[in-house]
Length: 182
Image (cartoon, rainbow, N blue to C red):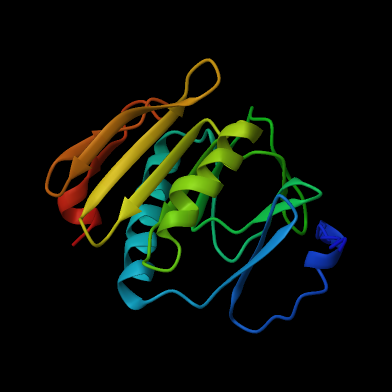
């Protein structure tokens, strides 16, 4: 028996319904996630505020939150919780989406997405050249910062609330987990 598999593309993605669910295509496969819970949204909002405050005094890029499409390739379309595109980065901000790899992506893990965020998305972000990948785990109150170093990601910070982390990409930015993960 010959079972052919269909690889979805960005063209298929734009035809998906706007129903409050998060749709992503990773290596041609469709993933659907329900809307995030309250704490998830509060954490994203705190990180957004912190990054926006940083960018007011360091106007080096633009930050976005989901829902916002990031087209890494024709068969890789993601909606990270938060992303940063530096002014001199590789990604292009268009009217409808970001084309290419953002410089920083933050994902807040949930029970339904943690494995995908830690494995599949991590590998895709690494492959396409996302410079920094931040994973926030609300269940364990931790932040993990991964940075591209000559190919694969290298962990530069793994901290548990109330400890602080710093971003190599954003000099002077201190991530106080006590206030960001409360």
